[in-house]
Image (tube, rainbow, N blue to C red; front, side):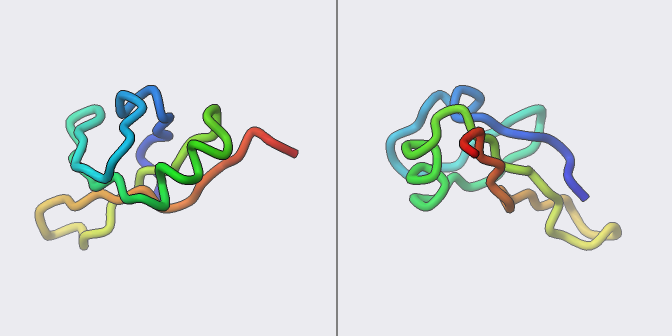
Length: 69
């Protein structure tokens, strides 16, 4: 389930892979995420929970939603 939509601005327009926190959810920004944002700076990634409901929450950027048609 999508928990939030994350823009490049939300992660400070990072230029290198790193860990970031957005709305109290910590996740890894990988090079592929940055590359997608460089191609479409206004696009957003869906932030989803990747851990089971009974485990501590783990979050990941999963699907990119482009603003280009």
